[in-house]
Image (tube, rainbow, N blue to C red):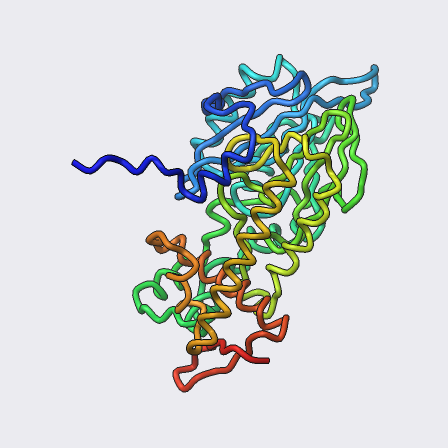
Length: 371
């Protein structure tokens, strides 16, 4: 029997440069882990290859008719499912010290983050106090559109978009056409009334000020939250420790230069102290923000170089380059994201004048080196 290779992989070497103060000590569904007196970590399962999401409880307060009311702010919600509601109910019963949820803060409009926002707000609203949703305007409005029936991540337009970029498997395209209600199944409703978060805004949560940091490329107007007094960044999906953030182009904005927007957004986090405790939406909390941003920048720089080389060799569609960008097998769900990410890289090369795009005789967009 051949012995296992003891040499760490490149990914493992990169991960070793980060510090995980809570490694191996994640909270079970329905429980929480106190990271500091005013911040608790909740973790819930997801029905995807990315099988969990981190949610956060922040001690909060508001003025009531008889004085200050103590409670909690929830940051992100999980998808709408009976299992997630069950886990939340366990949190309500055992993890809130008998205090109410005063507001729900959502980093962005993806289903695992906003799915149960409406349910949470309804659950904790009373005749005396509305538990209000807080999120960016762009993400709120798009979430409302998608949850009310506008096709997102599926339907005829999505299938035609994927076919235009080289995904021509008939069975797969039929699956995409059939996903007309994909978003509403996980986000059945979004509160129509909300409080707007904007870049640079100071948000008072309990005894601490949190500053909003906008991010683009992953979502329309993602909001991370930074607390200087606690040394904590709730990074959402903008900075993740083990995986790179999905940055894609979709049919609703087919000419987007999403990767450029994302890379520019990462620069906004560099002024934060290197010792900041980063609370990501997936993976473990970590310290090493500047190191991780450098790793992400290097990762995309390498992928762009690989793609440019492929386009110098022969014309490439987004579907053509999947095996170049992703070394592991992709299931159907992952392929929908992977093509969007391939396009984001190709569009950045095109915006830089390094590749040009043309429609071939098969009706497929292909990219070739040269402006």
